[in-house]
Length: 306
Ligand code: NCD
Image 1: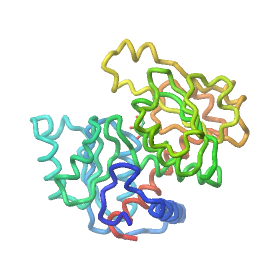
Image 2: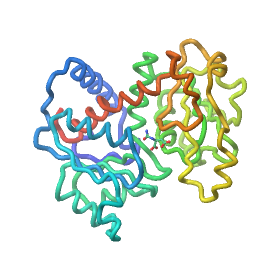
Image 3: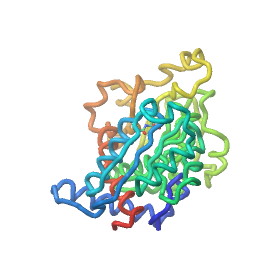
Image 4: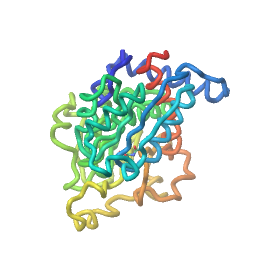
């Protein structure tokens, strides 16, 4: 049960919670499509605190809250808040606690969401903490895979790109390992997934660590592409040397299965060519759209509306 609980990492979501959220998200999706008015969070307030840029995550959380009949207050830009005057995270959280019922936070520092949760009795949702995790993205990724492919169990999944700094893949690999996925991790050698995550994958035989796409994506059911996380590099030259490491274009798509899907948490920079958007296997915009029903399900459950 996630009622009144914070979601800081994907470990906060039990198997039962996940099943319940995926089912509820389907119901939310149906209600949205039928334009049925949902008012289950009437008079509840969400506070979104974004210390880092965001398009999809903040907007889909806010849209979800509005769609549930609730209201939103936001600090979308720290430059216009008292953070610019030197206010601590603790004090900002105390204010969010006073003004709202649920706090959604994104912050450049790993562990910031966990720290935030110590200064409030209200549930805190981690919307990305540095190179840590992004648990609600993982829930919508799983929802997308289930919707697109029809199942979650035993799939061949390739995670490609910046696996060192990319927080979405950090939460996703932990979830996938529970579903007996065969996982290929493809990244430049300097951007491999952190060892502590590899250690947590139950079946190590199901994991391959690679640095080239060549010959390694033709059996994939899911190709999950990520952006090189420019903002995490301390050395800009290192980032420059990694730009364009991988690029998915139509000729790469020809080597993939007809039944596969391409996912990406977005934003993309140059890792998926726009020509791929026309391919029915390009699922990334559908994935992003799933953010609303999935976050509706999560927020409604956390606030006890369903
Ligand atoms: C991702 C993030 O912020 O971690 N975006 C998102 O939430 N959909 C991925 C990224 O920024 O590369």
